[in-house]
Length: 283
Image 1: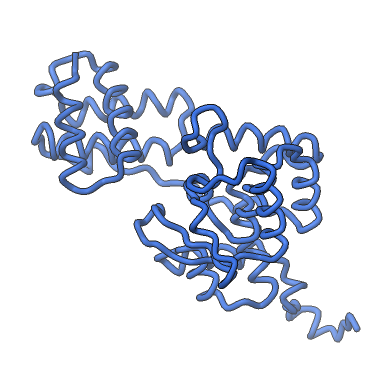
Image 2: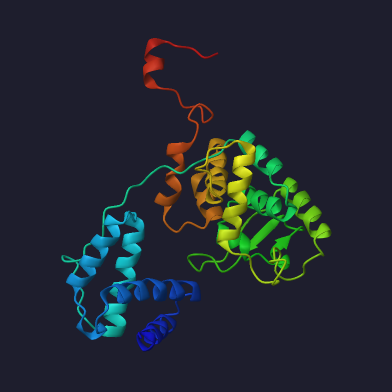
């Protein structure tokens, strides 16, 4: 019913060089909105969007997801329907900024021990040892691993900025064992064993949930917390936050500074001024 509009939406995304994953996400969100409104798209108004978002909020969607709907429909209004957007009628919602879940080194080891599938163990080890995002480790290729320089080349990143990150010796051992035991893949490093294509994020999340349960860890632990743990542990080791920012691929330094709030202050040698004043000694 709305195929023509969705095709125009895809074209508008391509002319702006948006990633195909982003375009597909836009199409799904806009399709959901159009099916709910069930009216001629040319007659849509910002009040309709407001009604839709309030309904989704009532259904329990978080502010971050609702803001994705907001951005997507706004893009659709401006670039396909050419309807003026009213930020007062459809404001962006205030989002909560919760601290990330961070695992200890001991918990990381328990997680890896509980991951029996060598492919996923190698992926989890790579994410923790290098700070990669889930989507980045999924899209790794064999040639991205440099044994000579002990580096990993990360392409097709979230912010379109290629970067290098560190390759740990322990992680290289796990990767090498995986590679020899799984047919020595020469292109996609972690292919789907049925299709030979990239794995999905949901597949990695499903394996993570089982490993987390088997390891007796908090159910809040997700694949992304491995990246958080990498950054937090580096900060506790005294690594300069600008270097951590570069390894993570953050454009905004504020994105890296959040790890100051979750790091172990004792490991960083920070003492409370209250203890100093009272002459408390930990020696």
